[in-house]
Length: 241
Image 1 (tube, helix red, strand yellow):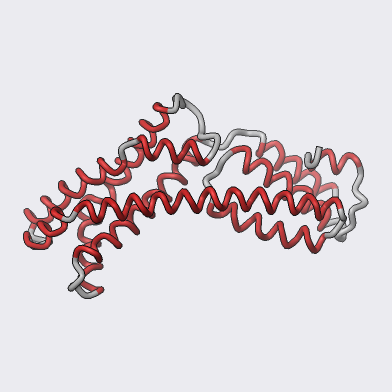
Image 2 (cartoon, rainbow, N blue to C red):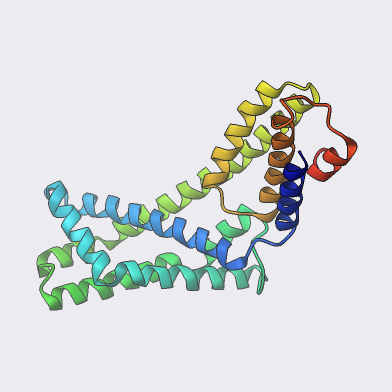
């Protein structure tokens, strides 16, 4: 138990340190990048309905390899920085998901993606890797792709907000089971909490609260699922003040 307490104390020291700005930014940019990738895929399928699966994949892969993949990373990074500045966040992390959503909306990602599509398609035509007719069809129907990207981004943030709401619910449920000393109920909610944390944007208050639950849960589990913890152990877990 002493070793466990030392591990928990180290966890608490770590959780009190702020989430690194680059880690939060990296998570957001990766998620938005994947979302845009999905939007591009859906848009191309809508614009080229007579093309078979393999052809769509080849065209998409070519667009990604010829500069879209790297370019969109820069677009997202610049958009996030600009979006932050419009919120008055010049250093530090986002404090909630709504702030991230606003920054993405204000950052100009769609405009950047639009310009990037034109640039990449012009490049592919010059290199002869995508025929002019196909590239022209994509450029003329570019809004289909951009609308698809916009919809996928909105869907992602709806999922984020829903996950945050469910995480709060599961945390409250865990605390209620804790009060009843029902470890089976705690275990069910704890597993749900871990699943939601995998997909949520790392927000400091969210991570810290989850860590506190993890600490208390681990203490009780390693105490034979018995709740007869010392005051020191409970205080160390730093939960349910």
